Length: 222
Image 1 (cartoon, rainbow, N blue to C red):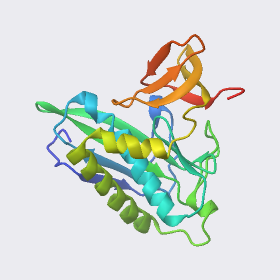
Image 2: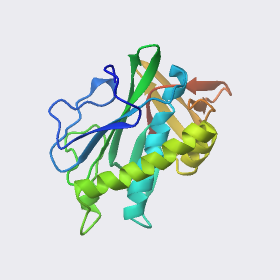
Image 3: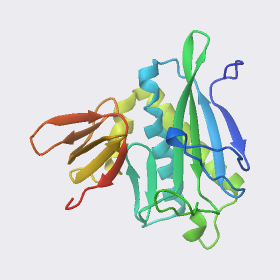
């Protein structure tokens, strides 16, 4: 990106020895899963680029739902894709200054052959659900087709249709959740996603909180 690679450049790794997720957490990356980073340079302000996490979530959902029908496949704010309640993908959006503007690096991994065993949350892989899973190359083609379509929609129509499609597939909207970000913890009703992608939570007092980052869980009694 910093050396002038063009918009829509894709880096694909067979495996990674220093993969990382959100907050610098280690992302276990053995050969057999899909690991990609897309350089996306839409020429938009930095504040808009985090919307790409929702674009990626939808692209992964499109990819997996095209392989599996009638399954419990949902999206969890801000960027998790859950199959049967377990995480099947990792998504991380980072940014880099490129001259006079900022480009996005959209990192996406999909568990194809392996599900990390030492993860903070339950995980799964496509191989756990398909008798004959696709090859990594086949999965890459499916994902890129889905990502290209969702990215084109976002570039042409903005975040509104992405937000609407994401919300239709989302988990826990209307339910009581707990959101932790460092030492801060907010418990309340999850009222959906705002126009900029922030999570809206209404606590028992009626006060509304806009949340831009955090770990979300279903609260007790939720």
